[in-house]
Length: 175
Length: 354
Image (cartoon, rainbow over all chains, first blue to last red; front, side, top):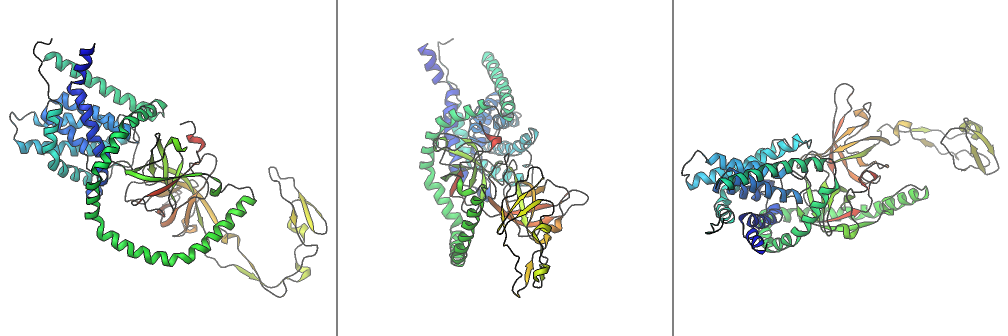
């Protein structure tokens, strides 16, 4: 029993929850005040895109859904919307990189930027689907550009963080 | 490895279904989602506080870099404005007090009778698709979901999520925000000035109250009426009608009295003025002037008590056909620069139990 608890606490998913909490706290403090041209940088979406880029579609999507649930819990929007959006972001980042056998570093940055920016389009779309109208406006383009540029800037450290967070330890001798 | 992939696939499907389930649950106003939020808020609050302390120098540096020139210019402008408004504020305070006394005398609700809690804004919305702020007062101070929030200028929004020591406030500019309001406007037509009345020309009490049975004593009139739901109070009139001693009498036209049109205020997102749509399609655009004040209409199902100042009409958009006009509103509160707020401890009936 005790071994199982230790194993769960040492798993990458538990590490993902802890790191997501830290990134989320940066999102709600620093990045809710630092607003280039009036748009908030979505550092959580960038982190999730990095998780997708450094791993596969499933890991990216699960990381997005887990982080998204946390994001939803502190927002006034319906619980589950950000989870779906970030799930799409994580999966999209991995899918975009799939055709490339050995992607270069700049290609990874580009994919992180595009995937994170995609989240800024999917959010108002999904809100409109559930009946929360009024966000499908031209200002999405501004949010998209700011997120893309910010993703290019923060992707390098975030890729390292995502790689460390979601690395799988191979324990020899275990079943 | 294959087992690992299968587990991931299962987790993915489970999480996606959970998302859809929670969206449905939240949109049907279930209290269980509020419980989840409350628990997560309790866990997350210490981490967020530490993060806020650590990142404060960075955000401070960003604000200093970006807003220094604007702050200096605004400071100069505000100093000039304060000097101009000091005199007007004294007169306005006297008028407000008089108005509140009159309302209290007639048993009508006033804002002065509602308790409030002062709160400070501690965070802005972290997303680009909601207009909320976080304040440092929560259920421990008596704050509940639905309570209206004001600043020194006027209404800024309503409480949408409450935690123990903090709350989320949805701003008036959020597209999900709607509130019943009234537009108070005055006609520009000039009043009629009548010549002094002769004693015999003065209207008798009987002719004025011709729809009611009236008994007149020497100094007071008791009116009884058959109109259902109307209970007139005792009216005091002089024993003898005295004509104005040579002075003209100014009678306001019926059309000159304040016109009150009731409508719904809707937010339209950041940087876009909120609008008012009218409930009554027969409302004429010509009856509403630019600059007319917009106040909350109140009522048992309203989200705010009556007469909370919201803004002024900045543009009247006429529409063809029977659709009434749409008004664009300049809010009196500056939503981009919020610091200290007042939460009115007034929970609307529609939000009670949340």
